[in-house]
Length: 289
Image (tube, rainbow, N blue to C red):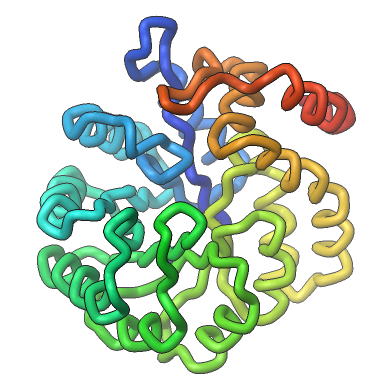
């Protein structure tokens, strides 16, 4: 359902720290105009962890209202199952096409706890749920066997895999049930994973170069792997540069340069350092950003 290119949208802020609705609406338009199939508000890149519940719901509502062609996969995760259920229901009521739900962070649940968490969320809504595995942020990994168990639950339709564990992801791709999608959660591994059978990407970098990321992904889907490899090689330095500091610090800086928001994340994240700019600026200039 979410095959192809999805963008993990930043949440642009104004100078006073409030949500910049105008920039957010223009960002949704920019994505749609450049081939992105799905937009993802309130993920990690959207700073969901520092949004109030009211802001979280407001951002999702803006994106749903603005999107004309793209599907909306709303970030609605939490380390508290009841809170994740609440956010998921609110997103469903607003008209989201699906839910992106991060594995519970900080609490470090067992694999059975992870399974029961996502089962409870899936049973609370009627729209598709995409599981999000990102051990670098959560402190725990969803192993392949747990993912394959989750894939058998009605309503759990995909996983965004950002573990970086190729053996784990390849096992999921090989053994998943029909119709269960595997989406790359790491821009730098998208080409590799899609060549092994993954279905698409939820991308950070496509905030600023949606057309190029979409073109690369579409080439792989269409079997044009040489063209895709050339595009990946051209874009790869930017993929890597997006993580010179914690996401979304670098991408917010880039998007400010392009006219979307003030460039600053919320504390405890800080604006990009001068050292970070020195690493990132030459690549941005090379790519015309």
